[in-house]
Image 1 (cartoon, rainbow, N blue to C red):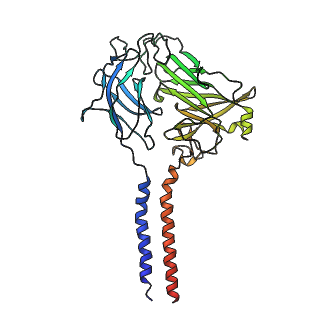
Image 2: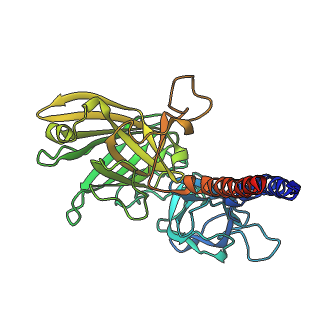
Length: 393
């Protein structure tokens, strides 16, 4: 019997599979979403903000677009050929909150990001806008404070306009636990100065398993800013959980100052010794993780002391967002670290190490390839079986 048809069939199947494999893999990669674009009015205390300010858009504390205004009271325009504030998105950003800043001062309005979305968004800043020469365009007027708190006796914002920049007066830090929301603390910093450390003492709750005891920041610009720090054992809405189930606490830091205007951020926190012991880990194996750019990353964390039945830790972060305290190592994936790291070092240049999440997007990339391989092997086996039977006849 002529066996050539079977051999040709098997060869054709293998060739077709090889040719279509790259297309299958490429089809699983998420394309870069089309940016959104915004334009609209720009006011402070219901008065037009002068031209020449920078409007910045952020998602999860990351700058995704900016536009320098050329007209008082407006940014961008509705016309097809007029400039707009283009805001880039990534896979999974649909519905993410976009926050706007005017020369570093947060606007009251937010929008939810959607790919290809073009819309008018009127932005407003509550406090009067006044420049150093008094004719507008550079920060808050004296006495308004510039944040969620009253007070402040300097003309300043987080973009560096400060009439009292020669004053040696240290920044004023106002810490106020929210009486209506346990685990939530509001912080207002007035008179922050570029390059000078701002220390926030949040205290220790002796009855709590976890306490966020302090937050130290070094801004790179002069000005006022606010923080809202929330701690909870419950996963924040819209944030994927770490792959490891041993999370001790989640910490969320909402902030009016952008990450780009922060040089250093150090977290201080305390955990009960019994809590660490119950998890069967050494205190040196506890780490702070940060959720940013759609992934969790492990931050450099130090166990600095054990006092009054509580382990005390410090951890450095490149910015502010959502954080988790959990055992280190079990969820870390060193294969995703920065390629510029030294050999044997699983940290990237920012001191972060990528951790696994419950998101299966990475495995979805491999699934079509695996399925294709199974189909090819099955066909080859069937053809070979039929070929063998024919040969015995």
